[in-house]
Length: 113
Image (cartoon, rainbow, N blue to C red; front, side, top):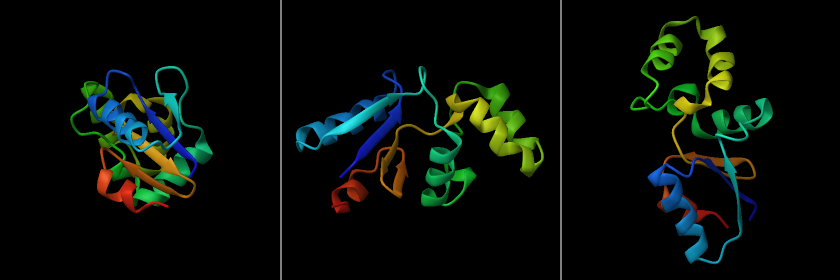
């Protein structure tokens, strides 16, 4: 398993995800989205794995202005704007190769081998 957890230390779900893997002795790499954002390739891979852009957007994020902008701009511009403003993504984003989840999903992580 090659687990990557993208999130921030302030996110409770990100901390719970780290604890989930730590308790099971599974090594993971933590990427703090405040310091380093998802690359275009990582973003595309996660988007495909979770089923589209809409599943990546956190409707309850603190940045309501950016959220509103992304909701109402043209579809072809959304992806670029999300890449520029990754604070609106659901956290944590957990990747295992081509598989990925958004949010706290321990039932899915247990099925990964």
